[in-house]
Length: 210
Image 1 (tube, rainbow, N blue to C red):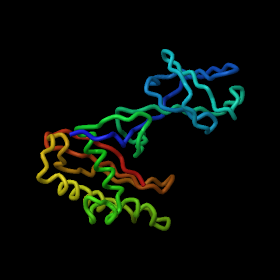
Image 2: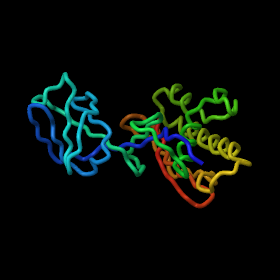
Image 3: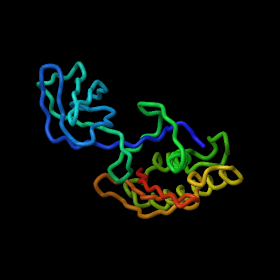
Image 4: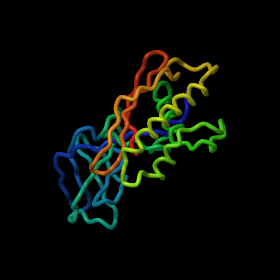
């Protein structure tokens, strides 16, 4: 079964060096062939061209190439780890998604939903957005049990939704393993490393951070 892809993963590309001309910036680095956008002095631009192992970036109108202080190149990522940025929404190209990727997308979507707002099931949804907005009054560790409970509820909601449906085995949720939980002292965020296991044994792990 296929759906539109609305969960994209991105990574920051390692840039080895840059060169500038009067009109563009040339950035050299690995894995730039999937670049989606660049941030020049904090300003986003999608005006670029890929040329071999370099990227020709045309900065925004308000940034002169002679005044480039920072450059961040963001590319699409095929792998998901603790350095990956996950974005929910239509990406830079409309594509289909199927298999375990479709399951991950559904899991994240349901985890974010607030119970009572989903038309396909009034009580379904992990409610993580509510946990995020509630905060923890400077004690993020107190949110960990709530996040874990939201993940478990999402697991049960998806299993209930999939019950009786004729879906491929790589889209059917068999188990949700919570591999680790972590409170990052630097920014007070809570990160949970989760792995989804499908009926055919496929596995996909990703981080959930609030």
